[in-house]
View (cartoon, rainbow, N blue to C red):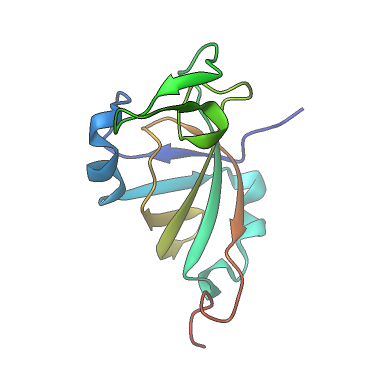
Length: 130
């Protein structure tokens, strides 16, 4: 069983594939549940994070679909929310950490989205200078 570790907070109330680029250009907050907050220790050492989240408002799936660009592809070759396991993955820029709240840029999840996990993007270029 997967238990969400937090929730997305931003101004985006409804999914709109035509506004994904605009959504990703703005900041979002990720509020990590207090019981998982200790897991954020030293997360500020990283510039980028993988955010794994649930498409909680998506139902069912399509194995082939038309993308935002109008191309017809298989679901595993695009970013459609209508996926067999309804899991999203986004690389975000970490801007700020305050207690259990992460301020990030680049997230394409709507307000209220359950966050399933957070992982640092590792590698010499991804760490912040100490």
